[in-house]
Image 1 (spheres, rainbow, N blue to C red):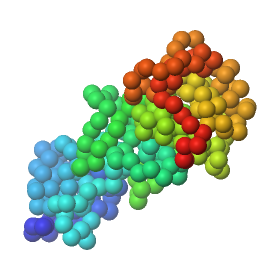
Image 2: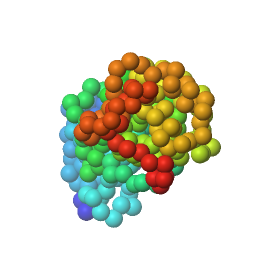
Image 3: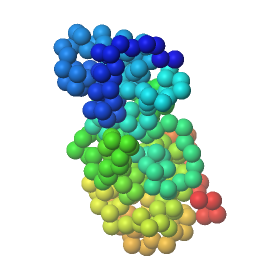
Image 4: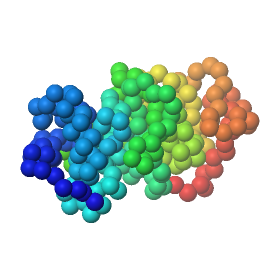
Length: 269
């Protein structure tokens, strides 16, 4: 429950609600409230302790909706949190698949592609699991802006989403689910084979084309031009189809792949 607040602090809360979109750090709060750093640190901690702010993580806060019945249990929108905590970043992987309706599967957690240095691939903020992938900012292409209330969030577009999960199938829930997304993409209004090829070339990992070409072939998908483009980009060396599982499996020389997961045409999308 919220505890009492005096008029001065009430004005500060109202100003933060009005002038700040999404989670904010102490620098932003100091600018909005025109207070020095030592005072803003004390004020934000005080307001959070009394239920008027929610602490997202150390040094980052968010206002709590005035109508929240249980302020202490209130949680910020995870996509807005991602912008505050991991920017420069974009939402990708299975989270982008869900956004573009390329899957009906519901995943736990949010995939974030971030240019920030990261110590591990997983992080938890306000009870939400984030799956992180470091991507240099010069490779943050193929994204679109979506708005979550007043916060602009970048999300990979459908073609970039496809390339990212082919580059790292773990971000797509494993190669079987990635194959399902490829099938759904080629059957959808999002289909743009030339864009997929351009993005794959720009990313610079030819394993993307090995996996994509094999998936098109294994599932019997009607995409001959895409298949030819992939065949023309197969690099030397051997790559596993799904790096998240045991590397044992048959070798398919024409695709330069060790097929450690079998895909079947009759698998449901």
